Image (cartoon, rainbow, N blue to C red; front, side, top):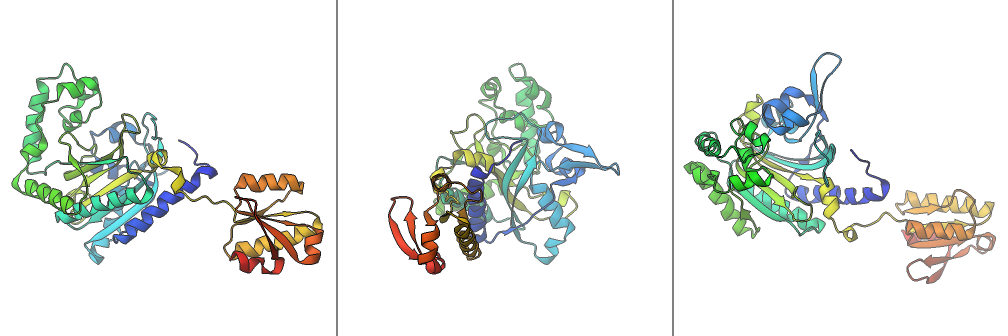
Amino acid sequence: MNDVLPDAVGVWQFLERSAREVFGTYGFAEIRTPVLEKTELFCRSIGETTDIVEKEMYTFADKSGNSMTLRPEGTAPVMRSIIQNRLAAQDPVAKLFYIGPMFRYERPQKGRYRQFYQIGVEAIGVEDPKIDAQILMMLHHFFNRIGINAVSLEINSLGCPACRPDYRRQLIQYLEQRLEPLCSECQRRYQTNPLRVLDCKVESCRAATTDAPAVVEHLCGECDQHFSQVRHYLDLLKVPYTVNVRMVRGLDYYVRTTFELVTDQLGSQNAVAAGGRYDGLIESLGGPALPGIGFAIGLERLVLMLDQDVVSTAAPELFIAALGDAAVEQAFILMSQLQVQGVRADMDFQGKSLKAQMRRADKLGAVHTLIIGDDELRSGQAQLKKMADGSQTSVRLDALLDLLT
């Protein structure tokens, strides 16, 4: 787990602000769910045999003996909230997004922590493949908005409960003939979760499954048509993508469209955003039979990739350097008036020398500085210095508020 320190918070705020602006344009509203949920929610939704449930969840008994879990992902809590608050009764179509911390006990890697932050999107109640394309278009739009271009979209289809069981049987039969080169983890789970073998990053596993049957070759007619339409609409929107037939997702609830946004800048863990359809999830949790699709973006990974120049800093617009008790008092009044009007202003509170105050202004990255002493108080005027080029302008102290606002 890690701290987000003040000098980095501006980047995080930029990303969060950009998400709210872009997603709002597409009609998505923010939802906030608790970080703590009943363990059963994740076991039922994510799947008992997934790595998250088996190895990574922070689970404990509360004082009443209930098994509780810090949320490892955001989709299941949103579905629980939709059911519990009867949101579907108000409107069967819901477009929601969330921003917040998740928790998984996994091996720390570059850009991955045990408390990590995600931006997530969920679109509920629409089965039409156009919503799949819109979600992917919005993801593409968001990354353009924040200035990250070194990513590529990969898509696949995982079929549905009608066609995936037959594919699953064929894949298990295929893997049974190739068990020896598989890693111990894949040997353990090839029968309970065979699709995950295709996603294993161990080189021997990848080499042993190069000619594994692809799920897209075993889709039923409806799934094949849906995937074809998703690609058609992406082409219409000019959203670039490639089909990755080996891509699977680590959560059991995914069906049909699945996707990842990947990069070559973060090592082997190359996904910066991922998601897909989960048409049966709400119903499996006791809610209405509504389709859904969504994605999640790892905030820490975005921060690593972001060009810091796109982020505006929170440097003061004005730093007031004051000499003498009367000047300090006047500087304090001026600073407070400016702050109330929305101007970022600062001053020294420690009685430092003028030279030290100017160093402080420079360290803070102040746009302007204003020096006030006895002479300035008597004349009612002072020099406003532009720090970038050293140019100075004489200003009246009683007009400073109008000048900067």
